[in-house]
Image (cartoon, rainbow, N blue to C red; front, top):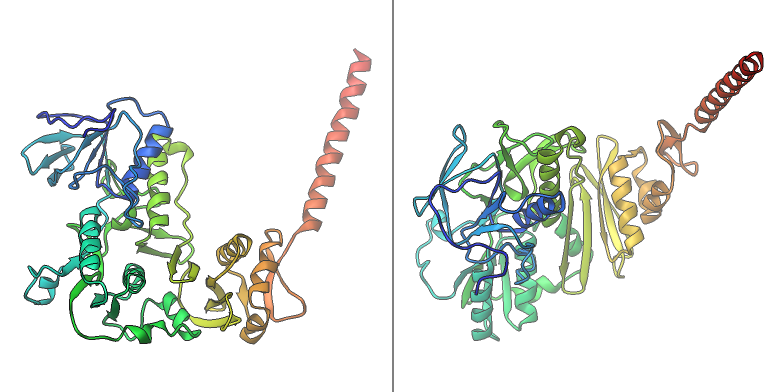
Amino acid sequence: MALPGFYYGQQMGRAFVYVIIGGGVAAGYAAHEFVKRGVAHGELCIISEEPVAPYERPALSKGYLLPEGIELILGTRVKSADVRRKTLLTATGETISYKYLIVATGARALKLEEFGVNGLDAPNVCYLRDLADADRLVDVMQSCSGGNAVVIGGGYIGMECAASLVINKLNATMVFPEAQCSKSLLLIFEMGANFLLTWLWWVLEFVQTQVYSRPINHGEGGIKVNGKMQSSNTSVYAIGDVAAFPVKIVGETRRLEHVDSARKSARHAVAAIMEPEKTGEFDYLPFFYSRVFTLSWQFYGDNAGEVVHFGDFSGHTFGAYWINKGHLVGSFLEGGTKEQYEAIAQTTRLKPKIEDLAELERQGLGFALSVSQKPVSSRPTDVAGSSIVLEKPLYAWHAAAGVIVAASIAAFAYWYGRRRRRW
């Protein structure tokens, strides 16, 4: 059934001011931002290969993200793009023109045939990419209750799927090429989560594949964009998993596969298109989070350098800092409060200098709480007599500047008053 306010018909040679390719989180949030900024009815179009409107892909819920008045061209694949003429050719043969194009195609799960594995038509080989995949996976899980499963992939989706399988009474085995799971997730196992040991069953009843993902129809590095999410072609922007953008805090161009990056890059790209003079560079702090069984953690920054663990490993709250080239560049926290998560995020963004790792371990979460409560600074000073260096607030400079300004105003007022008496 068609949703009110959407247009499902196809006409040859349609033209739009803004066209978004893709039907996931980034596409939905970009559309929301366009509407929020007053895009006119009929100016915006979304082209998606899926038969449904954009939805929250991480939860694979059926809640649509879009308001009314946006033209949807669903179940349609874009075959090619002519960026010089600003036109798209769909698989149905329709040509669609645009003024601005946003590529939000996301990433896809690798197929087993790409590794030379046969038998891909087996009924219990599943992937998880879209709503149809999720529905099929649920059906297979229900039909195999009490059986055994293998998850190929050690990232966030692989971990979360394995946990879901166990919750649904299947024995799950994780298989991945590295020596460990995703580096941030490894901390969970280092600190005593032994549930992986209960998953080691090798009888295959079905395979859920989430090896690695890569941008759809693009190279491994994604579409390279600048700080406004703009590609080398000034009319083409890329957002979400497919975009490789400058991550200022690490000084590198990276492609980040997470819903938070998708949402925020979408909003920034739309702002850059509609208000380019008022929109600065995208200054994103890498952020990842996940929930596995009773564990709920957040990670900020970069997992590079030496790791310093802290907290009660047998309890509910523990974490780690990553120190690279003498500065704190990454933070992980499990079981934190809203205020504690905000503190590690702010501390990571500040990148304080660290000289004594043992002292940092001793202070633990208290270090981030202390740093986050201090004003922004410009000169280094020691904290609590330790070798952890923070920045010293320039209160003296602020006071001196205030005195100078006040004196200048007073002198002007005195001069102006004498002039008025003369008049």
